[in-house]
Image 1 (cartoon, rainbow, N blue to C red):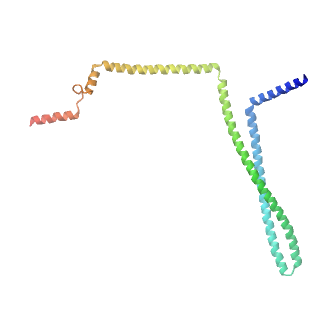
Image 2: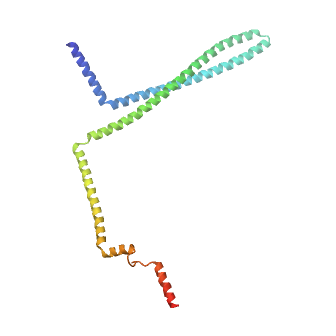
Image 3: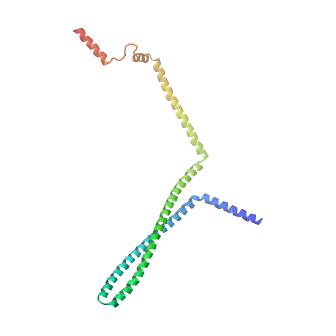
Length: 228
């Protein structure tokens, strides 16, 4: 019995936790994205520090190489002058510097390979962060749209529906009035004798109602012929 009670309590706690997460999903997502952005920024700084140290190691290696080359030149000059004691001291210093140079180059190589991996990881994180931010904006827009739809009162929704119905009736009446006006105009035209005469004249039935310039010209030519 006690075991069942514990299981029930755990189940209710899990359900409450899920319900809380669903109600506050957007604020939780926003905070998670902010945390992720801080992590990406910290990774960028880590890459910058690694690059700076790599550059210092490179400069150190170049400086060691220059010192070794200078000591070798001087040791050769000491041998030529018979100063083997000085040449031996120079050789000992050169051996120490070469060991240091080898270590510096090894560190530089490790930095170089590590930096490339860090850069790749940062680029991937930046891409994921950008996708998350775009998804967050879309989720916020959807949430606001859903809230707007859900929060519209029933009487306001009914008012909108009534307004749409009124507009539809008004458009229908206006269209009927336009069609009626066109029909009346056609009927009046059909009953008007003048309109019928015009239709007959246009169809070539009887004398044309409108005199053309060609007809006037023919009439003038006829008058001229009669005069002569």
